[in-house]
Each structure stands twice: as C-alpha cells, then as structure tokens.
Length: 275
Image (cartoon, rainbow, N blue to C red; front, side, top):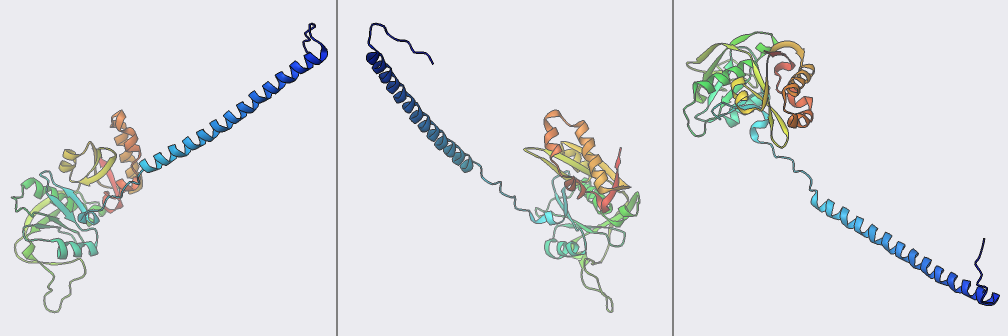
C-alpha cells in the first residue's frame, strides 16, 4: 500500500491528516449503510402495501347461480321461446309434474324411452311452425333413435291437459312415463340432427340445440348427426374444426373450452360431424 507524504509537514502531522481522513471516510460509510438499510426497509414496506392493494382488488369470481331449466336439456327457439327436455326418467317426471303449465306444448318421439320436451309459453304467444319443428328435431335427436343409428323418427305433440299419470285399471305407469289422451299432432320423418354452437363474449360458451336456432345465436357452430364416433373424440374434432375457422382474436377463448362442455350436447355419447 502506498501513501502520499506532504514533505512540508512533519511525520506526526501527516499521520494526523490521514487519521482525520479515515474518520471522515468511516462516517460516510456508516451513513451509506444507514441509508441503504432505510431504503431496504422502505422497499419492503412498499412491496407489502402493493400486495395488499392487489389482494383487495382481486375479488373471487362469483359462481353464477344456475337457472331452473339448466338441470334439464334446454335451448331457445329461433323466436326466443324456452324449450326444456328431460335427460332421464327422473328429470322427465320432474319436468312434467313440476314445470308443465297450461299454455305449454309437450313433445315426445314415437319410440320407447324417449324424453319429453316442453315449449314454455307463459305469455300465451302463438307458437310458430319453426319453433314446433325445432322442438320436434330435439325430441327426435335426444331419443333412443339416435343411439340406434336411425336417420329420422316420428314425433308428436299434445297439450298439457292430455298428459296424465293415471294408469288404466290393472296397469302401472313407470317413473318418467305418462299416459297421453286424445289427438296427437305429428311431425313425421323428423331428421335427427343437432347444432353445437360457440358464442364468444368475455369468454367462449358452448350450447346446443336445433341447427336453425344455434346458427342464429352462435358465433361459430358445427352440425352433428348419428354416428359411431365416441363423444370425447367427436368433441375434440368439433373443437379443432371451430379453431380452424375462428378469428385470431377468438382463438385463446376457444382453446379454454373444456372437452366436457362440448360432450354434454352430443346425444347418446356418439355421433359424427355433418357437412
């Protein structure tokens, strides 16, 4: 280590000068340490405040309360009438006993074990031929005719007062089944087909229904019919097809859709894409 010596001063004077300089440097170093310590404390406090603000701003997303009809199969017709269908014997029973009202119409495919579909009409509207046809399509498509691989089946509709749980003497009506009295209005040879739609808002939502109604309300949609492809594989194929045709800004939202959200609209767990 080298030191500069002022020859004009004595050795004790030079030593005293370096002693004073070292004390000054030590005070500066101590001051710098204190300043650094205070700065670190301030940064830690600011980080805590930032995290606290972020926590207060991030509120858990409230789970949307399900509407009563979402426990069933459902769709809105092209003229915006709610149509609700059973999924099994239990929901068939509940739909007819609890939710069927005076001005509604009841649909059923002419095949054993088919679900009931009900056009809800609380405002006593005149139900259009289009809404009748769309409901017939869904009653046919979600019946056992789809699983059997049929291309079409007959569907009828009646008024609520024609539906009864009273069995003839000596007979028993099983859960989910009802007696139909009087004249039936028929849709003969109703084609089995379902539309699966993707609606893009803040997020992508999947819904199903008659092709004409889905096409009207969806951003993207795919047509399906009876087939042998299992629902999981078919749902992936549907999603991939939509991704190929989607706008760039919608891709991430569509990618976020779970396969199960698509599967739930595929009748009988099998099908194929229709051109």
